[in-house]
Length: 290
Image (cartoon, rainbow, N blue to C red; front, top):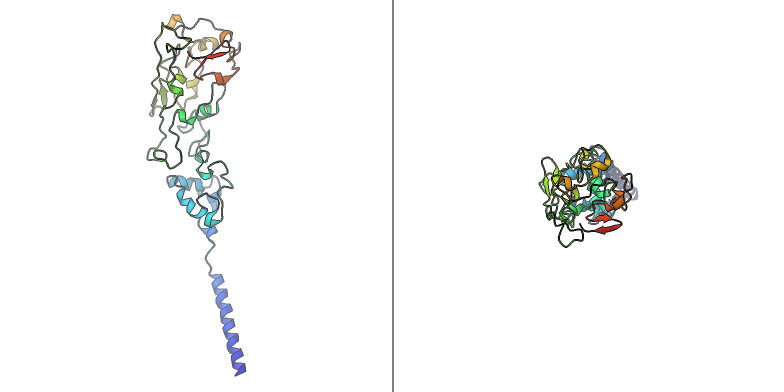
């Protein structure tokens, strides 16, 4: 009887070992290795997660289901913040909107989504930095109505200060009664990508009122397009604002640094580009309304 019990116990143990071994062999592939394709974290791969999210209307809420409401790991124990470590994490503006690139990764300024973003947002040798809010409605969060919608391109609103600056108001120290009030009415043409009637591109006293630069055409910001005559031979001639000979009141002097030395030197190189196209007139070192 004792021998029979030993044999029975041995059989049961053998059965358990075989069963456990079979169960081990048939365990499902770990979740972290099967939820996403192999190239999901590799930039440039056809399965890169940025492309996947774009194809799903930028809906990051589905990521939170596994990676946590703060993207710090959640049930997956994989944090998104190791890569997306700027303020806002994956929902930060810079995650999708990288200066110098459009949403598809294109970098050519001829692309609609690239254009003159770098010139405006970083500033350069031509003028001061312009914020996103000057041209667009900046959402409080990524899911705010109007941010990610059915429109293919971002709306250009001109609903902020910069494009709408008025010049030659009677209350300004440089008021000229010979001229009208210059009150811009900014307009964006979504077909040819041009903006017109903006202070920042010529709609100001002694400026080129009909100037309509094209967003993705770099020649649109050549010297003389906003004030002056870009067809002239020399840089000084190109830059000279309208004089009495062509309906303006600017003095007919080509040495700009005589009066505007805080902005340009005698070679018409910028001394301080942030004082150019900034809403003020810098004369003899003073910034005044004009």
